[in-house]
Image (cartoon, rainbow, N blue to C red; front, side, top):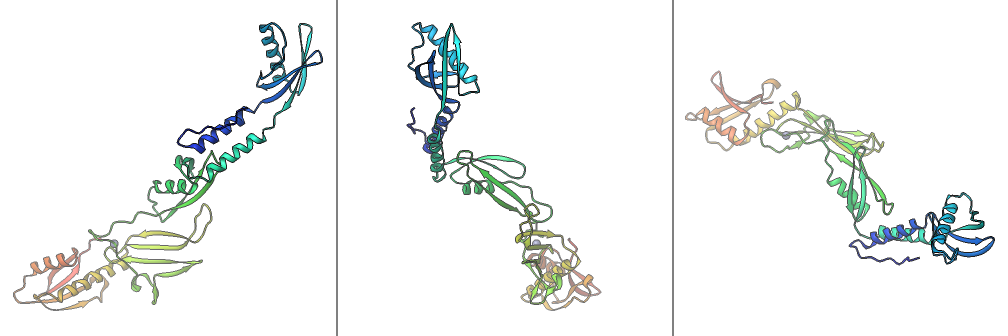
Length: 342
Ligand SMILES: [Zn+2]
């Protein structure tokens, strides 16, 4: 039997494995066969399926008759559940007995080829999937197959906090497999205007300990709540989240909440404080005074210079500080407050 492996493809180890497998498969349903004529040994050969090969027994001087006898013995041996038997053809008893062929070398060759491929960086095919879909990836290792699956993974943004998907990859050639959990975070909501969120943890809004506002213990981790100073949205980060599918704990999840009254009032104060900082450098501002006593009506009173124009001053504040600022006249006094653009 020719067990020599020729490798000409660009994937030599995959090709070698394919050939080793082909050799192993050819040995399936294959036996050594010994034939006798009326009890006298006639010759040995190989029975492959119903076909007898490599046998030098002369069963008849007539070639056509010989082919017929070979066919009849091969079919009888292949169809029999016994390892030996005989058939009668025109008064001659043809006996046959089968011996199993040792396939351990061929199996070892397959395993060796599998190991060679598994320990190489030759690209090979992986069948990967999540909890629903599956796909094929070419990669040089299970780590690479998982990484490629992760980076190409397209999941819709979860409505409520982080979710986890479970991706596994399996190589049919080598039997290698592996799996990974991929965290899908919700998409960060847009901030006010063109701002980037600026996440802070003001104690007046998020509560908790003064020295560690917005943080509460949760199992082996914490839940941290912070607020964006531009839009008032909340971001909640849980460092001890649990994957409901696997039960794994200690994962990080993130979720977002819409602004509420507390965060909106705080954003207003932040905007008014920024306005006061801006007014420090303005010639038209003589003085100003904050009044944050009524949360529903937080404002800054401003004394403008005699020749200052209120509209121009409002434009300046909107341009320098925040588009939500409104300057108006209240019983002869100039006040700045934040419009309700929520
Ligand atoms: Zn924001």
